[in-house]
Length: 437
Image (cartoon, rainbow, N blue to C red):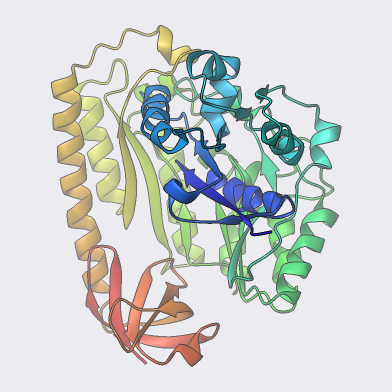
C-alpha cells in the first residue's frame, strides 16, 4: 500500500510554521507523507493566520480554488487549521460543504483521530479551548526528517490583549511549558544532530511569569546554552514591556545567543502606543535598545510597525519615522492597520483614510529600504559565523544563516553543510550577503 499524500499551506507567523511541522509529524503516524502538489494530494490542509484584515475571506477564497482538486468523486480530505479555523469553527463547515475538518489552535492532539474520522466520510470541527493542566501535556514532539535548526515551543497564548490584536482570542491565554520538558526536547534534538534551536512563543520573554515554570526566560536560556551539541540559540517574538534587564544581560553573557532580536515597537508615538495598549513608552523602548547595544554592540534589530491606527495624526506618524531613525532596524514587518472583529480597537473610529494609510506605508517602507541598504553596506568586509544549511543560489555555492540572522551565500562544497564557517562578507543584497571563506 502506497503512502497517502499530504499537501499543507502555511500562512502567517513562525508559530504556524512550527504547528505545520507538528502536523506533518502527527500525520506521518497515519500514513501521510508531504507533497508540494495539491492536485495529487489525498489531504489538503490550510494552516491559517487571522492577524491581518481580510484573512477570513482570503481563506474562503483559497478553499474555493482548492475545491477543483476534489472533483470527479475523488475522496480527498480538505482541512483547515490555525487561527481562522479557531475563529470560524463550524461556520467553515456550514459555508463550504466540501471542507471536511476544522481543527482549532488547542486541538492538534485530536488531529489523528479527526483524520481517521474524515477517511470514513465524517465531517468534524474541534475548536474548544482546553485548560492549562491539559495543555501542558499536549505539546506533540516533532519526528521525522532531521534538520540543523528547529523550533522549540516554550510558551503559548498571550495575556497582553493589545487593542488591535486578535491573538489572545484565537490562541488563548498564556501558558509556559515545564522547563524539564523543554530541556529534554532540546537534548533530544541535539542528539538528533540539531545545531540551532529557536525558542518560540507569542510573547516568549514572558515565559515563567505566570508561575508554571520554576525559573525565568533568562534562566531558561542559560540552561539551554549548556546543552552539548546546541551551538546557537534564537528566540521570537519578544514584547518590549517584558524585556527585562536580566534578559538583556544574556546577550552579553551567553556566547551562543544570536546577535539578533525581533522587538516590535508598533509605533513611535506615545499617544498611539497608549491607544494600542502596549504598556510601554517610546522612551522606555529606546532605553531597552540602548541597553541591548551596550552589552552586544553588533546586535541587529528587526521589528513590526503598524501605520494608520485610529487617531494617528501626521505628527504621530512622523514620530514613528524618527523612532526608526534612532533604532535603525535592519528589517521590519510593516502593516496598514485593519480592524479585527472582537478586539478593543474595532470599536474605535477608523478615521485614517485608505489613501493616507497607503501613503504613510510607502514612506515608511522607503525609509526602511534605505536603512537596510546602509546597514548591510556597513557589514561588508566583516567576518560572520555562518551555520551552513544547504546549497546556495548558484552552482558551487553553499548557504546558511549568520549569527545575526542574515542569509549568506559563499563558494563551498556541500561537505560544509552542518558546519559553522567564518565568512568574510564581500557584497550586500537587500535580503542576503555574498561572501568568501
